[in-house]
Amino acid sequence: MNGYPDSPRISVRAYLLFFIITTAQVGVGGASFQRKIYKMVGQDSWVTVLIAGLFCHLVIVAMFSFLKKYPGQDLYGIQKEAFGKWLGGALSFLYVAYLILIALTIIRNYAEIVQTWIFPDMPPWFLALMVLALTLYGVLGGIRVIAGIGFVSVLIITLEMLLFYYPLQYADWGYLLPVMNHSPRDFLKGTQEISFSVVGFELLMFVLPFIRDTTKAPRYAHFAIVFTTFTYLVYMFTALVYFSGGQLIHTIWPTLTLLKIVEFPFIERVEYITVSLYLIGILPNVMLYVWSASRGIPKMSPLKEKASLYLVVVILFVICTFFSSRLEIRRLNEISGQVSIYMAFAYPLLLSMLLFFKRRGVQPPNGGDSP
Image: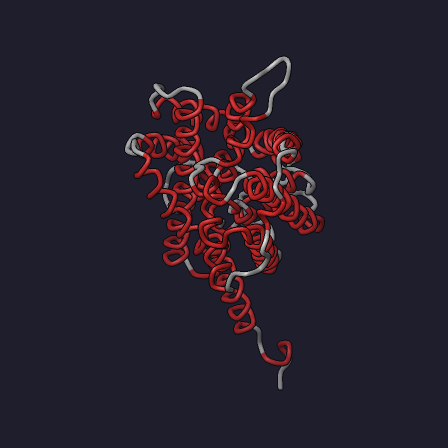
């Protein structure tokens, strides 16, 4: 038994995988990634978005290559079956720690955005408590609830892109010139900077067992990557043509700053609404990471899944209280960005190669026929 029932009540159709992966990728990182990349590759920053999207497609292909060989198993089950109880358990522990780290980074960054833009005197522990309470409520509802919130999140992301029509009216397209005047090394550094913003697709390794029609899953997974890449291209192009180079380097949250010029007769400070709606944008993101982490702990300990969920939430809340200054949050972002390169990009590729050679090694020669 793999522990993943096929009941329609706790599984989702393949098309919802598009919303799950999209909302897992487009989160709090979308508010600030332009500045980091611009420092590396300047006006060619949009190229690094395309490169990151291609890498995501490559890793998705690698994931499906071994997930389809272990039907009904998530990453934890695959590692245990392939590497044994102890080594597989150690690898699962590392991945649970990574999932908690990313969830922590998302929560703390959102708390900082709210403090900066709306409520400067609100303590970060209260904001963390609010996000984690909603996360707990959603995760207890199961994958179908998380997918439903992800659907709403994608709608909000789409509507937000429509608002970029207003800053584009003041665009200076000359800011995009000259084109392609950076070295491959610069582009690689820029791609590393965007890694944290595009992670989330690795959650496919935990969600796929809950997809009913898995034969259709690859198309929706790749479609999600295409949509995410397009979304970040819109974010990046708008920032590049609206801000000068000096302005963009000194703008911490370019996406939110772009929306400051948007005004309607019935509402003047649109960015306040955007920051508030960001909560719906990051909620399914945090839920997916917490849900995935809480499913791994019972594979390594006697704790039940619900107890593991409470444990993960408590750990996140306690650690969030230790980050108070901008410098500490920046350091957390740097660590998360570096770790995500290895855990979201490198590890699935390495795992797919190891499992490929391992399965080939155990096959008898000549298809099992006796000589």
